[in-house]
Length: 321
Image (cartoon, rainbow, N blue to C red; front, side, top):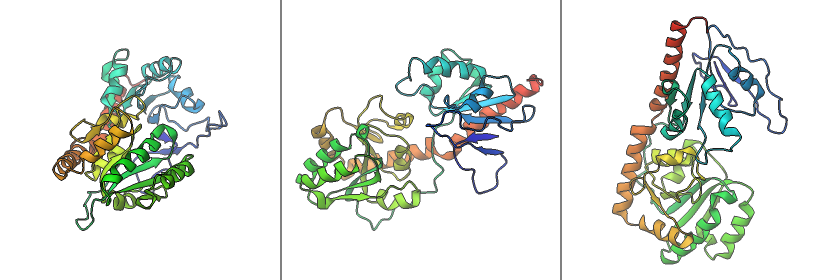
């Protein structure tokens, strides 16, 4: 049984699927009685410590439970939540983590044989670039928020654009600072070369932007956009640090990603480096290779299968759990 906040897939699966609609404003407004067959089901769920329904199962002795999470996260979580996550991982049958470092954080305190990795990714069809499209732009797609560093990106683009009149900046998303971004773009003198597009996350809709992209530039925070960029053979530019989602670990400096460690001037310099077609093509090949070898959906499936097999073996050895 899979319990999560996502709608169940439309195609038939071999899993029972329960959709919980989370409401952060109404603590406890969730399904209190999950129809969990403790003798036959293996319940797989995210580790959401705000959800009393899931906590009641995690901290009880009902059957076999597998939690899937990022672990403590790149900031190691709050002092209060950290021990709760450890206790939960110790109580459940098995834990699956987004990344190897997430697993390693818990391996210090929890039995290693019950810890698994399923690299967080997206099921994507084979990418075929359109050879007729010119790579003329830097791309950002995601939320428009202060913590993403998008004002710094606009400043950096103004520097690069002044030297390269054919370049464009493509922004795909929405968020609370969108109006401020548009105002800044208009004042910067390059508004005719900065494109704002509505938010989209579907591969089909993103493809037309990825086909044009020299690089995906996400200054202060990256997440699943790394997966989608590498899928398309598009390198990433970002700043290292602990603000990122776990997927930042897929970014390998000078292979599929360029890092900058200063402000907008250094970001502009790093962006300009990728105008070197030889460097850009090498990094594009590395990005695509990384996706195929390490982020293909089958790798993620294998992590889940390993955890489920562990639960099945444990059930055979201890039939009364």
